[in-house]
Length: 329
Ligand SMILES: Cc1cc2nc3c(=O)[nH]c(=O)nc-3n(C[C@H](O)[C@H](O)[C@H](O)COP(=O)(O)O)c2cc1C
Image (cartoon, rainbow, N blue to C red):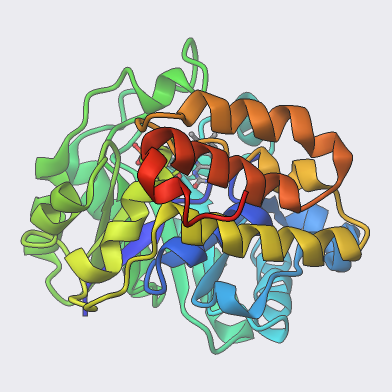
């Protein structure tokens, strides 16, 4: 069975964005933002971990380099009902480097193997790893192969590869997502050489058609920025990849469901802006996109979920005045 995932993204893939993604696709596999192991273990899990039931299938992504801490995180992830726990071995940020985790751990395959082994012992859910091709001068295909071999021998069966290297010095995390060239060929070779492993490709995949094409070479595809910048593209996954007939809702139907969700969230004491910030791009590329964004930005402080429904009705009216007569104002 192929898999399409929405990438873990700090400041983005919180529960509200994930809920939005789930409205767009019943099949996409969702990820939390990265949670640093120490933060989870010393913080309040009731602040960090809650999610809505419909978000399943859902993975908790963690960052760290200490096997016993990560094992404790794995236990917590399982107890909270997450479907998978994923270790971040791809982040190049300075803060993460200082903590000796993220992509610099690609230079310590033995440490990652020990972490994975401890996590696997601690839980029954899959333990997966997200990494890159390499970093700095440790960027040959053979380096990545040795890393994957070591971590697979500890029992990891699913590797998500961001198909570019990272530079630890001199590039910001954002530049590290754009400047090093994509090397899809290295990921295909990994799949060819480790046919028993599940290999997921990530980096620069922007449409459902592109994802489908990738699935002829690898087992799974992870989509990051495109899901945030052009979220309605995700609505094509269920039909386009999984053949679910009639699965796609319209933007207006999605907006209606988001308004219902916002009503619930505000009822819990949450703020409309928590949701509004993630749904600004629902109409990206369509007539009325800027009116939608403006209506959400200006209306969010009212804490009225109907702001979403009204904004969508207005956009639909602009796009198609005839259809608008059927839409409640
Ligand atoms: C704002 C932002 C935050 C990110 N945070 C994380 C993170 O928490 N964990 C992680 O593994 N990758 C993180 N990434 C990297 C993405 O998961 C993904 O690997 C990268 O964006 C490449 O995929 P794309 O070209 O489809 O966006 C982040 C990316 C962005 C844009």
